[in-house]
Image 1: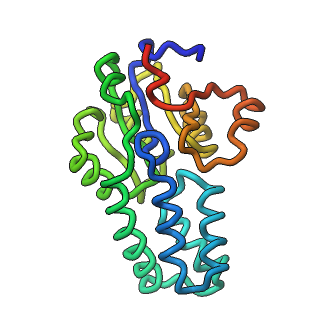
Image 2 (image 1 turned 180 degrees about the vertical axis):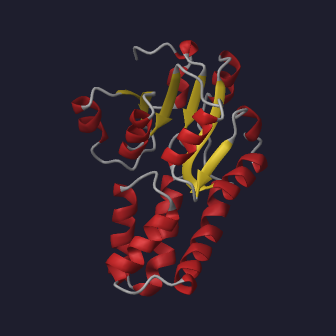
Image 3 (image 1 turned 90 degrees about the horizontal axis):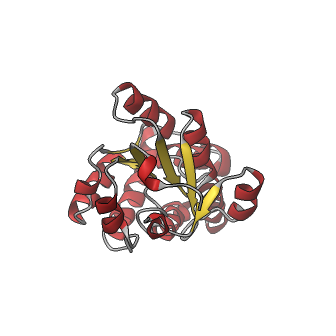
Length: 217
């Protein structure tokens, strides 16, 4: 990798697939939540989820109801999906693997760290507190229902993201979000759901490493 991690004043992390090995947890939870609508519909939602990594569950379930099931998006049916999904995910996030080297990397950098995730913000904060990870992220832990673009722009305005900054993500959406704020980007491949990530990184000249531990100088 050609990037010196010590040069950055801010490190922005996605959560799923970067900090936590939670992509499979979320795919399974999407499938199980959607299964009452049919096996094929549930599988189609999982495909949509994987192809749109980093986008919030609210957007994905609204798409599922409107475009896959073909019903009106009502608060009642949306809430049932969200609750079913959240119950399974919350348990999974508390038990899945944490990226190795995170503690060492934190000790080796003086940069401000923050999370910008498509996951539910309150859920993330509870999980990170439970797993004693919250203190690593002195810049805060942020998630949906706000989009990543909104989170990033807001934290720039709040002087919480200072340049040079580096975004660490595992999806095309993460890269696009980083580009939207003229931020450096490294793709983390170890747990990604993005099947064509190698081709994407090659075509777009995106730096990539297997895991967070590979960033340690």
